[in-house]
Image 1: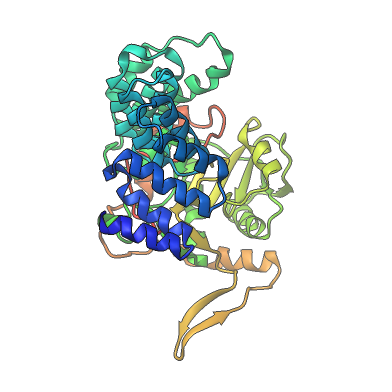
Image 2: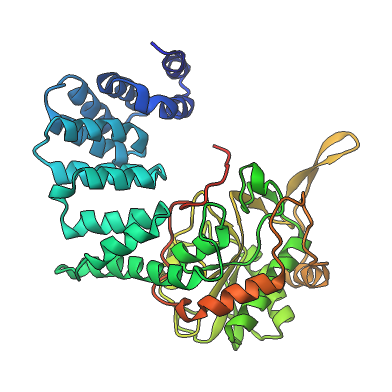
Length: 425
């Protein structure tokens, strides 16, 4: 037994289910599949996941029944442990499950959940003889894009006929728009493993206004991890919002305020900086700029209302959470972070006597908004390792791509795509 497996069992014995799952994830691909199923059953028991525990035991007790491994893999995905599904579904396909298309598509979904898109492509190509247009060839196109293999994606999309089932039309249109955006991005951006803005636009259809000036070549690649936000940074992203609107040739007629306090603060600041009147948000209002601090915890009804934009509606989000994307993809993201603490939220700072609690700023929304407007929005020089990103670079990017912007629904992408960044588990 490996030391990591010993650690998994010790964590389970201590009722640390989350810790056991994190450790198991690191060794899932190295364990014999029956051992993987057995330990998953123990983990599921501790978490009171009865269906998963039952499927895991059935798979462990039936090494010659590939259909049992298919069911086990499916349940792993359903219960949020896709790393355990991968070896199970590989075994099901190797051993000749009677449901190969189900096992293959579920294997691809498991790889997607783990952001292992190149391996999803490899799995699909290894079973090319059973691929149907939908879902498998669609998935081959989609995962090729997220793996950064645009040549393969274009080849596969050219083979992907319009679906007979109209439910698949939005998915096909989605990858089509991704490829159109990639075509516009290519002349002005590298679309390599460090091109965060280029890939963010290609995948989500949203412009990324700024890059983090810290740790670019030390694992962050332009994203923030834990961000203790500042008024100056809020001002900077709003200044870059103005650059994007000018470069796109758009002048909204109003700023729409969402109901959350943080959203209203930054919305009021945006309205003053852009010289626009403020209105309350309504889903059908046209030619308006909807402003959010973050969409991460957006009310489900608002998410549904924002998924499809009204004519001329633009959605700006200051802090986009990239590790757990919201249900709506912003048309413009000020920055990408794992999590953020608003400048006016309660927080902790280091003082002369160690950590000190700072209470929330209880001033009226309009007063804090004016503080943002008065703040110095000069970009933080950071550690001087982030590539230069002056306003003109952003303006040129927008000018080259604006004819493919604001098209289709605001679908999030639950993956970092080809540009990876470090994050805290």
